[in-house]
Length: 303
Image (cartoon, rainbow, N blue to C red; front, side, top):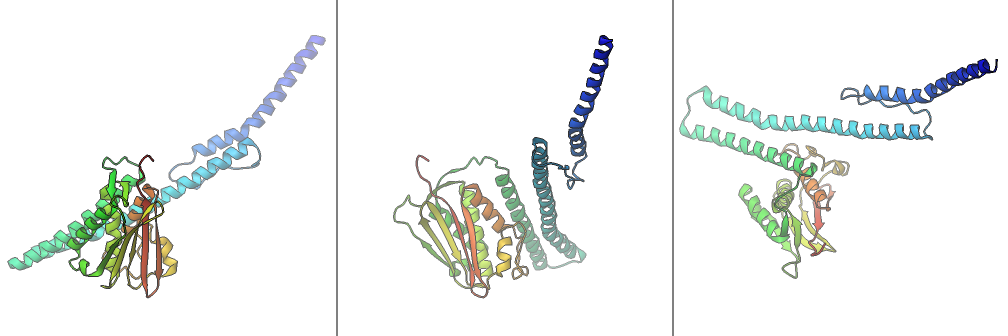
């Protein structure tokens, strides 16, 4: 009788333990099943959280927060691809249309040269867009840059101005350059010189393009431990509600959409500033112009 009681008690205890363990593990099994159901087409799914005070609830909250970031990044990537495809299609369509027009009938040599010139310009626009997108992708992927070195910011700025004059023949008439430095090594930075020149060029190019042929003030100076480039134009300016979006890829203000451009330049400038622990800020007054300030840390030996 005693042995029978012990066996029955053990069996009852085993059943109770089994049901208790199953009940304890069921939420974990449910969450595993739900997590396995989440894929690229169902990133909106989230784990159920019944109690956010215990470890399992905290784990589910953390997992859901990670899914929020993944979903946001996924949608941003999709939007980026759509925008890039649209911007690339524009010059490709123009190239195709120009070529078909040139082939429709016999034309004189000057007409053919004009068509080839238009095709060449569109091809250069496309190459410039692809180059900027690749540069941005390398920066955001944190790919090591083999050409990083000690550079002098004023020399890079002068090089950017020369490059700008090649694309805007009248740029020299508009840009008022002011380099403030007491010593030769005062404006040294650690960077890839091609990247910094791209940032300087994009800021100057925007100011000349949207400055409505009015003077553009470009001032390079040292502020604390940062090298700053301040570019100010006297164009139409930008509406206050648009400023926060101007550093997003492919965004173009309403006043600039009639001008040639892709909306990639400022976002690339921001990527370059972020890479070197710097920043870029914009201040604009409607009808009075826009000022952009770009800065990165100066080179300090031993740091």
